[in-house]
Image (cartoon, rainbow over all chains, first blue to last red; front, side, top):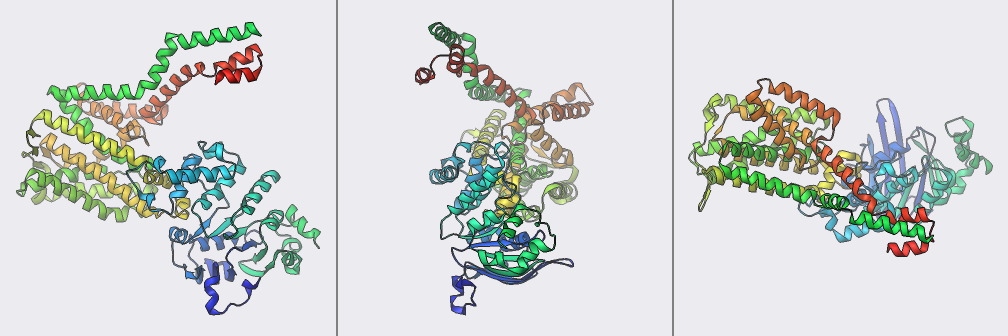
Length: 275
Length: 364
C-alpha cells in the first residue's frame, strides 16, 4: 500500500480521507490521541482495537458529530474539520451506526425515500407528494431489492429481523451515494448466517467506493478489508496489510496478552490460530 | 372432492351475494368520501342558515385552522408549541392595528400576514435551537411575550379593551360584512389550508419532518440540515395560526388580550391531542368538541371546564390517539368484517383437499 508512504504535497488530492494529528479529549480522558492516517480512494480500510480504544469516537469526529480538540480532517483534499454532518454528507461522506439508527416510525420505503432525497434539492419540496417522484421511488425500490428487502418495503423496522435491520442501516447510508463510507460494526449482534449476508453485501459495494470499517469479528473483517489500523487507548498502534497486522506482536498482545475485552471471543481465537 | 369444492362454491356465492357483506364492503370503501361530503354539507347548511349555530361553526373552522397548523409541526415534527394562540392573536391584532391607522381592510390583511411571518421568522431563530421540553417552554415564552404586549402596550393595542374592527374586506359583490359570506369565506380558507397541509405532510418535506421526530441524528447524517426543516415547519405552523387570527377578527369584530391568553394556547393543544396528533383531520374534530364545550356546554354547566378536563383525561386513557385513533380502530373492525370474502378460495381449498394448482387457476 503505497498510499501510506509520505505523499508529496502535490498528490494530497489523491487521498479519499486524510486525518492529521487528530485529538479529542473528554475532560481528562484522551479518547483520541494524535491519530494520523490516510485512506486511498477505493481502499478497503479496517479499524480495530479493544473496547474503549476510541474507534467510534474517531468515527463521530470523521462524520462531524463530534468536534476534534485539535487536528485536521480532509475529504478528497478538502478541509472538512469545521463542517457539520449534513455538510459532510453533501461532500460524499456516508456513515452507519454501531447501534442501529433507523426511522422507527416510518416504513422501509419511507426510510429509503428519506435517504434517497437526502442530497437532492427536492428534500425541501413542500407541495408535491414524495410518492410522485418516480426516479427516487425506483431507486428506493432497487436498493431494497438488491439486498433482499424488496418484499419488506411496507414493513416497519420493528417487524424486521435483526439482520434485516443491519442491512437497512447500511442501505440508508448507501442511498445518498457516498464516495467514502464509514461502517461502524456492521456485523454487530448478528448470527453467523446473517454475518455472511452482511459480508456479501459489503463485498458487492462498488470498487470505487472508499470503505472504512470498524469490526470486532476478524472473520468478517478479513473478508472485506485489506488494510487495517489498530487503535489502543486512542492511539494508532500500528497499521498495515491485514495479514501482516495479524502477525504483529503488539497487536497479539493487545488482543490476547492483557486480558482485554476481546481475548475470550472467538475472533481472538482466530487470531491466535495464526500464531 | 367434488362435494367439497361444491361446498366451497356455495360458500363463496353466499358471501359474495350477501347483502350484509355487500353493504359492509360498500361502506368500507365509501366511508371517507361519504363522511367528508356529509360533513361539508352540514357545515355549509349551518353557515348559510344565519342562525346562532353559524357563528359556532365559524369558530370551529377558525380554531381548526390554527390547530391543524399546530399539528403539522407537533404531530409530524414532534415539536408541540404552547404559543400557537400568540400567533393567532398577532394576526388578529395586525388587522386591528392596521385598520386603526387608516389602512383599508385588504391592506390590513396583507400587513397582518407580513407581521406574522416576520415575527415567526425572527422567533424561529431561537425556537429551532432547542427541542423537547425546552422547545415547549420557549414557545410558551414567545406566546406570553405577545400576550404581555397586547395587555400592556395600551397606546397600540388598547390594553384590556382591545381593538374593535368594523371594516371588512370585500371582493365585488361578496362583502365579508355579511354573516353568510363570511361563513363561506371561512370555509373556503379552511378547505385550502386543509388541502395544503395534507399535501405538505405527504411531500418530501413532510417525510423529513417525521424523520426528524423519529431520529434527528440519523437525518443529519443523510444530508438534512434539520435546523432548516424546523425553521420552515415553525414558520408554516405560525402562518396558519396567523390566518386563523385574521378570520377571527373579522368574525368577532374585536380582538383583545383574552384571544391570546395562556388558556387559549392550552385549548389549541387540547384540540390537537383530543382529535389525534399526527393526522391533519383529527384536530378538526378536536376543534368541534372543544368549541362545543366552550360555547354550548358552558350554557348549562358553569363548571364545564371541569367536565372537559374529565373528558380529556378519559380520552388520553382510553384512546391515546384521540378521536382519529378511535375512528381508525372502527375502520379496522369494518375491514375485518369485510375481509372473509377474499381468502374464501383458500378456505374452500383447505376444506375440500382439492388439488392446489386448480385452485390457484380459479383464483386468478
